[in-house]
Image (cartoon, rainbow, N blue to C red; front, side, top):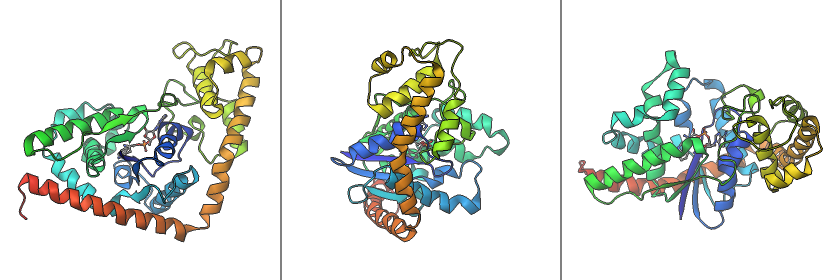
Length: 326
Ligand code: TYM
């Protein structure tokens, strides 16, 4: 199976990104043909720091490697280095109805947040994502829940193209993890954990033990005392139980049993220690890689070369099918 997925380089990657996306990637890379991209062209549709941007891209490559992506098995590359992504994006622009873009949840949310800075790129964002996916004849797109709608749109675009110009694209399918597809903010459990939000809302993969303990201690819960999973009535505790379960590989019911005589404070202390322990290998690997920029850049360069071969052949096929001058 061909797998494609990507993450934007801005902001700190958090445990939501890990459980929603990267953990699936690590599991999929052994038996599939995988491409994992750093989608810098998506990130520029929101305000960003120009000076920091390149280092953010490199940092994400380090995250991928620290989290267990093996560059011998999977292709890792930077989106803007393979120009066929933008080329295909333009071609797909011509067959995507405006209404479909305007109804995208993420567009509606982001355009509200960026009212004064809204650009056409924010609306067209899902077409670039469709181009990322379709360029590689992708079968499976492992993502968190918030990206499911975009993958479905990519599938619709592929269907429309195949119908208009003949069989060209594989129809992609989103793959969400059974648990952890939507990790909530720990400071406001009614909202999704987000890397563009305040640092108190997320646990970054590289947070120090001190920060992890502090953030979990002040995680928002409720006024009751029972450690019970109930997503609607107790969203804070339910989110923390989900994180505990994902990190410990224990069932939520077993954790509830284990914690039944414990206070929220004690539960949070155990959770903080578990997070500190489980994130330690990420922190160590990152420290090692930070001093090996040349090595990381080499991996991205090799990835770019391999991705370009697939992308060039696909874009030629697409242009032929569309009847463009050859
Ligand atoms: P991005 O960078 O916002 O998020 C990267 C991945 O992390 C998942 N995710 C979460 N999963 C669980 N809980 C959360 N709180 C949480 N927050 C984020 C996202 O679902 C995603 O899988 N548009 C995409 C990037 C993209 C892409 C692609 C993905 C561009 N082209 C092609 C797949 C295929 C995005 O902004 O993800």
